[in-house]
Image (cartoon, rainbow, N blue to C red; front, side, top):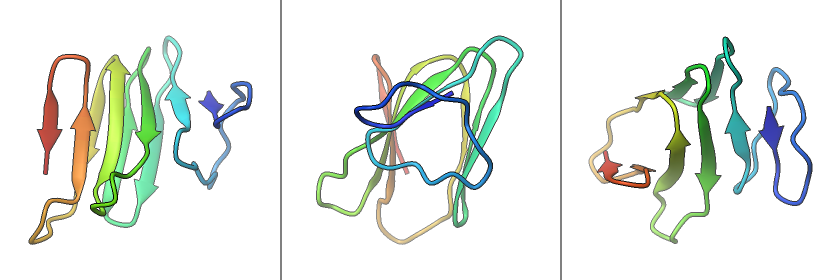
Amino acid sequence: RVAAPGREAQPAAANQILPVGTVVTTGAGARAALFNGAQRIALGPNSRMSVAPETGSGVTRIMQDLGSVLFQVDKKPSQHFRVETPLLAAIV
């Protein structure tokens, strides 16, 4: 399910563009895959993440607060991708 800012959660659709602030949630037995160029995010069952606002530094920020999420990120000379969870942050 996908909940864009200010909207109720709805079933996700193929090729859907997710604006900043969107929350993606998978139910039991469900999975989701998100793509942004060479970056790939795969959510496992019973997982939740959101696309967080940029801090002006050009870094893609993901907030993961539930479940299992796998990140495949392209390599760049500078930091450009950050995952934040309730207990830790991972920066690539």
